[in-house]
Length: 163
Ligand SMILES: [Zn+2]
Image 1 (spheres, protein in one colour):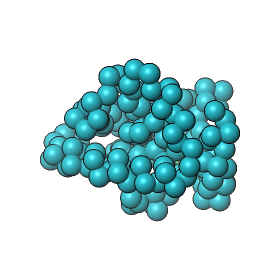
Image 2 (cartoon, protein in one colour):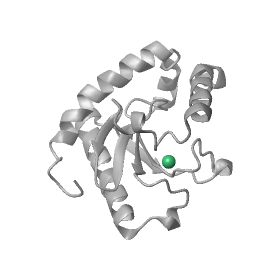
Image 3 (cartoon, helix red, strand yellow):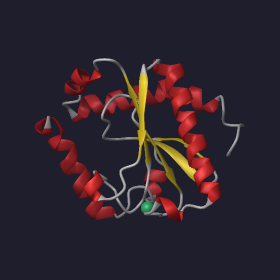
Image 4 (tube, protein in one colour):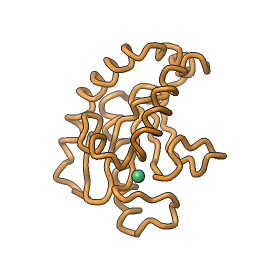
């Protein structure tokens, strides 16, 4: 499994060293992978997805520790997380979700200085599907297709809470 991800990991590591925090970079914030930008937090597609539909919610503020979040940031992050679940349900009908944060390198955080929630849709037996993510090119196409599918489901709720 590690060899499948090697090209991604290398690009990821180089990018991080060159450009600092990936969640703070303007090019990322305004970029094509953002599905919704709220007042205090935003939803972004994971460029290195574990599986199709892997989304992340991050606060605008560069915050490392969950206990440093304001109540408003807590609320908006959780509301946006629910929005991701709703959009993914509507678009892809997954059979389950993994929601979670990896806090600290020991817990598996790839970016440990800017906390973020992972929203990973799951299907029964989907561990086998991970092997299809072998090529950068395939993933890129897949990401854009995923975005096209998901975006209308987010736009429907743009006038809702937290915007
Ligand atoms: Zn940051």
